[in-house]
Image 1 (cartoon, one colour):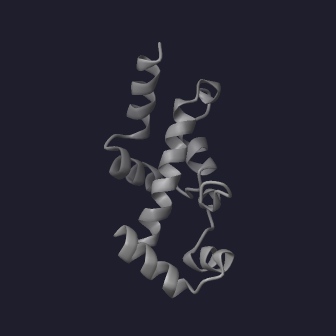
Image 2: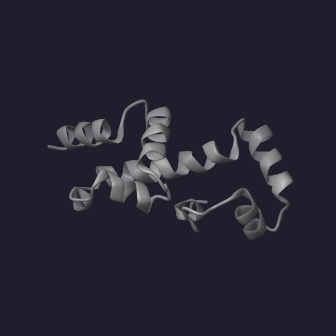
Image 3: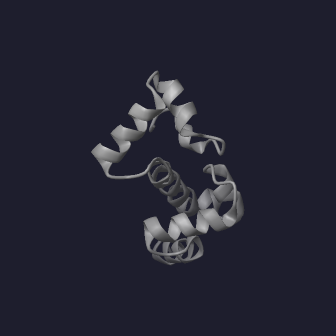
Length: 105
């Protein structure tokens, strides 16, 4: 997940990831559920949100819109991105960007 970053693919599915890992989709889903106590989508979104936080905090990307960042990290809609971001970071992407920019001044 960290080196190949398959979560950046907006079309990533359980089946695609399972095929890339050479395991059955059922086994992958069961492993994520039992070992991490997460659904597949929560597992993927956690990686996407961490990547989004990195991009939103990057001064070289401060000109990127929130929508551009959401698309770059694999989300297909701004509303899905905002919902997932708020759930994982306890704030909106805009609030996160503002907080980071005020702490780095």
